[in-house]
Length: 450
Image (cartoon, rainbow, N blue to C red):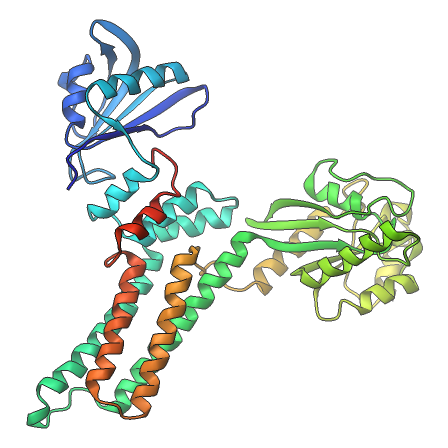
């Protein structure tokens, strides 16, 4: 499909032990044959050791692997050169390739060629970019599943169901003069309703996945000086927040992202909830309350040495509609009374010493179980971009129109037209029908070399 040959470094532009340079296109083999000293060993999927030379000068000793079309990532002849990771060496090899009229690839051009050569569909291609930019174990897992066709399988089944229904409706049109009914209006309505349910479920799975990728918002709250900042530092395993015995040390919001149970968590330490003593403290308390309202999970921190005070209970009363973990902190100060406090309170308190780390594993397990239990289906959710979300939303609208038309007993030709539009939209998701502008937008977000 492509007449030109491209190249790019496929590893980060930093000094390292190794670097990878990728070449793809019709001139890949010929170029390698001309500058590689061990050319007789340039064989399909064989790691050949030799030198890259420019005239008689050795640029570097390398490992060279040749992938013969169509058995390569791009579906074209491909060469991968593993050289030493000095950027000067990489630059010299790239300049040498330029002498062979091999141009530097555009961002995402290798993946774009793989898509256009039928090596993957768009959902699998976009999953590659998600994998490269993943910030949590869950995102990596979701991206790999989509690279292996998890989302494509769902879309293909939906599309096939619509195609079969459209074919039956059109067959009924063709044989209308013979009074043959391939599918009744009632059957069509049931099928279209099932398709709508599947699309709504797909929409939910995509929205859940995208929310999970952005991170679960967790806020630490409580009275001043109950040890919220110490607890934040313990969870982060670093001295991120200032810790002092003086109440009200934290007046602004401190946000950090970590992983818990493989899920990205946006952890926020907020100002202590109290009657503000000045304007700055008032603003801090207002910000705290606003973040609590928006949080998915709240860690309510209680000072064990003071037991549960009236101020604590007032804060707790505002958390009735939230997922809350009640943390009994500073248990190192009341070692002999900790069990009595836990037994006397109806709240499910988790005893912790942020100072010494006591009880931290129990707290972490509790947070992980809530994330896995309350933020449902994280293992079956999809990680998609706005393009796919918009297509799914539009597809739902199309199906809803088809349902109304069926209920009104409109002519089958009109129903078939709506189904044809739905097929086109589902095909857009996988890239069976996609404009060059859309492809440019998708692959332009990729890094060079992928």
